[in-house]
Image (tube, rainbow, N blue to C red; front, side):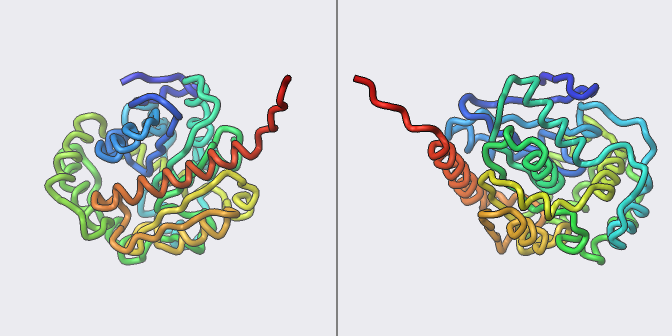
Length: 304
């Protein structure tokens, strides 16, 4: 896969299709190959240039060197609604990475779809780089207000007690974690196949802890999202235990004119039976953006 030099980092990316650019921003500890191929193909078939990438500290992108707090300590800070101090970067920096990737690809603006932490990054993009965002879709995310969209306490305790990740136990632990956070459509065999490919491609437990610390240290975006004018779609599962549904509600309430799609059989995952519905909702939001763009253009004068 190709890579780009962005903000003194190397960012690994992949492009499928041609047409309007659609930038996919993934979440915590999530490599670009975790975007479901079938979902990507749905957008390629609609004529989009689909771009996916590894965030810093995951996959084949640049790994950080600063020492993060242990996961249990960071989770405790999140549960206590207490932001961490002294971390190496925040979500604002990760949004700058995404904007820098668009620069490297000579893309002026794109439709942005972010999942989980990627939804937070998408929000920061819309706040800090509004001209780069044609439309925004924030999926199973929150606004960082430390009141809504928190992790269920029972899940946080289970995650905090997980064994130290090693390359030997990584696949098993990945399957166990995703079973805990996913909805009823979770397929353990499918996840195990993907987890094996992920570990073979890259194993970076320190990067996961740094990304989690960045989330904990980041700001409340609620008031800033009130300035966002780009057409926005929020998608969230009613069964999400990692970022509770209230996070989606808060996001939709924060962005003027946004729309909320609540999926009753979705946890913290992208359920295959909902791919078509998710695609259609995103396409509808993109259509709103295209209509808004046409309305903003000056009318051409007739010439004789």
